[in-house]
Length: 271
Image (tube, rainbow, N blue to C red; front, side):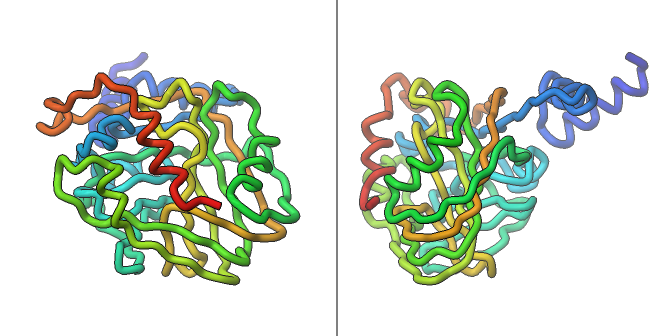
């Protein structure tokens, strides 16, 4: 590799936070036409469960790692959504804003979304039914899957995390979340399916957020009724994790398995 090319590679990595391995693999995959979809993740689900809410990655860095994703914000102040390269913050008062690039997140998952498969969902009456439809399109229980669903929702129910004090465990923090329900609203469900073996890293099973087409409403999906939805999925065969060096993360006891707490949080009030 020439010196100028290597220097440009280093400058890119310093500017975006990407690793050289990730950037080289991604570039080679695109050049050779090889399917290679990467998830970039900041922090871990276990840390979030323990109340490690101190921001560790900026919105600017998140944008450098994809055009699609979700997470939360410093002090658990709302739900994070990234769609078509724009990052949004759904707040507990029901509003949605585009935060500055300097805003920080304690947990986030990003990807460059390129659908591998798609299908139409004629009708779905509840959360379990939605999961069944997506299951039919997933290729493996051992790969991560990025999911995008577009359409008009007869009913959508979602929650928004409210700002919490550092150290408050996630079960307690989400017990006083704001809940919202809308009818006949067009928008997008976006998120990921993660394997059960990854429960200490990410939220196992389905984790989806909703963003309305007018970008005025959004949050963590609890319930759904809809017809004629466009479903797209992307297999993710590469996972890059950036671990925080914040005091909260460095001192946290992350030896336990958060699966039970995550299940309680994720499935609360879903129908």
